[in-house]
Image (cartoon, rainbow, N blue to C red; front, top):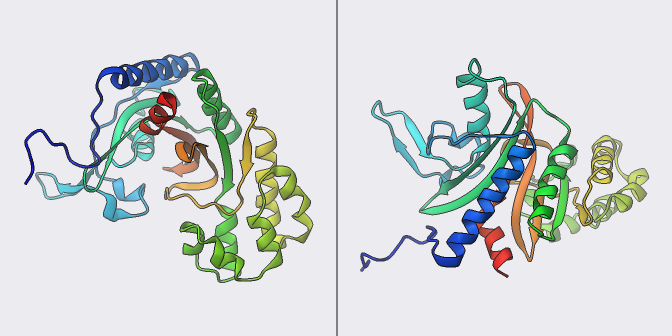
Length: 281
């Protein structure tokens, strides 16, 4: 039996101090991003391209439009923002820096509020990570920035016939059991300096991507940076360096580089609800 005052599991309700804190957080982030040259966009709640953003399509909340075309409640904002700007608004604006403050929805009734930014046509990931970190510093949030390169697990999987799902699912034990000395050392890497020390024993096919990761990590202006060469993101569109921000075992932000409509771009999303948990302590 469902009572009329109940809300679905995964839905969000804000009231009192939490509602006030959420509004202050979003207003502060909006002011910060506008000062950095970003303009705001609010995208439709419904999307025709949700399957292109989410690795697990079963998490999409799907329905049909009046012509029986399949669409979904917005499960991610990044690709929709880029497509709308480049395809629909291309003649109306030349602006390349955009931010959004809005929820995404996943099956069965999960709402996740996000504060995100997209930098269309820009490919220096250091700029985006530093922007994300500057915003967290403004909010006085101490976190760990974990940087990875999706090409590393992809190359390992292809060249050594290792199931990519071991990386996707974080099955570290199974990777250790492969008994590859260089892979064991790569798994244990935590810093750019550690990665630099093992470069000479790594397979040639990995060295360029690992050097890229080292250079990025050394140019991040944040006190707490972790390098995780084999971490694999669940977002389908990240295709190079990407990262997540962690605090008290909560992921409070993710970001990275991707290509959409032939354009290299960068973006990040802050998970508002996890950040509120941290701020409320």
